[in-house]
Image (tube, rainbow, N blue to C red; front, side, top):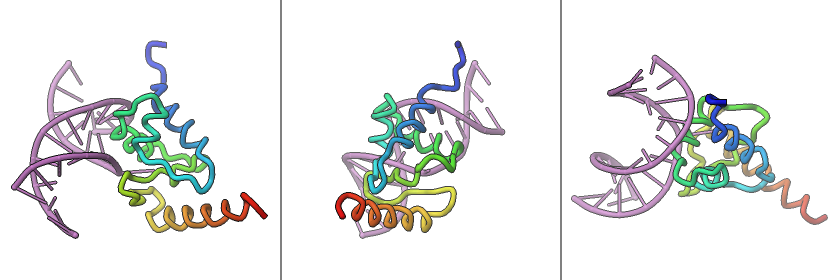
Length: 94
DNA sequence: TAGTTGACCGGAA
DNA sequence: ATTCCGGCCAACT
């Protein structure tokens, strides 16, 4: 396929989907896993337009630790993050 | 085809 | 501390 749906984009989604709950990766980390450690810019653009409800893209944050952006709203993103972290904590033990 | 945009990053003023 | 600039990559117009 000369014009595949950009495997990089697919990889980004795949990576995001593999992120365990409570874990937060930076755009740079996701880009690195996707095969383009320098495409952190593209990662943001891809997730921005191709947001999927099946993909926990809310686990992707900026290097500063700031949530960044979210199609649903940064509040929701932070809330989910805290919720998942909290849940993951009790899921590890207990 | 070329130019602009964007949920970024890092450094400099 | 905040604001601005340049660089990087993919998608959109």
